[in-house]
Length: 272
Ligand SMILES: *[C@@H]1O[C@H](CO)[C@@H](O)[C@H](O)[C@H]1NC(C)=O
Image 1 (spheres, rainbow, N blue to C red):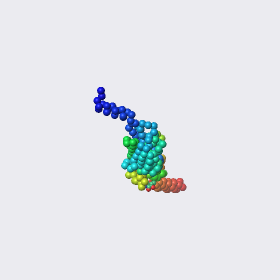
Image 2 (cartoon, rainbow, N blue to C red):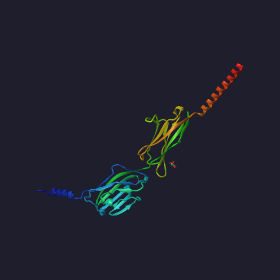
Image 3 (cartoon, protein in one colour):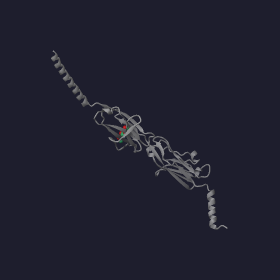
Image 4 (tube, rainbow, N blue to C red):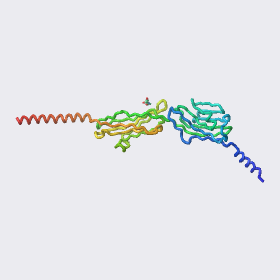
């Protein structure tokens, strides 16, 4: 015969089997990535409610970013705090509490919490949203012409990008398939912040070429979170003969000519 405690235990076990189950939410395991001005959907799936459709009158969904509320759905009434954010009723009924945010901005980035309350049970999940802005890049000067023996800098600009972390690499092409990564003469500045939260940064390569370097090909390579493929800015170095050399050569050839003329005159005289 069963003892009273066993009966309680048995009953409890029976109840939990027949219960609709524990409400659970599932969010994205990895960060949700978006490029600024694009729409973003942050997944949050409700399970364990034990019926085909959720009773929206028993459901609350609180979306927040850090401690800031973003969207509050409370038993049938929606309240988008972030302008334009949306939870769709048709989705909610099927347990999809994913949040739609149109035209993501840098300030939308952060740790999001999807907290779901069904009846009295609450479950929550967290996921990170990363907003990126692609840098606009250019080389200054666009035509790299350097007089042999003089040192000049080439600057690679990356403007209006987000987040701050960025990588520059300068390479010199040896041929179509091979290159070397340049370390000497390379310096990268501290990024400057713009009013809109984006950054500007420059990296410089100093060159002091000789005539043999004329026609060499180089690239500035920018790696950033916003870019699927690195940005590659190519340039070909033109080396000019030094002005001083032209003057010297001119002087030398001038004197050679003078000597020859003098010699010629002498010779002619001797012949005569
Ligand atoms: C960053 O670059 C943009 C585009 O070139 C320019 O308009 C802006 O003034 C720069 N910002 C700073 C802080 O230098």
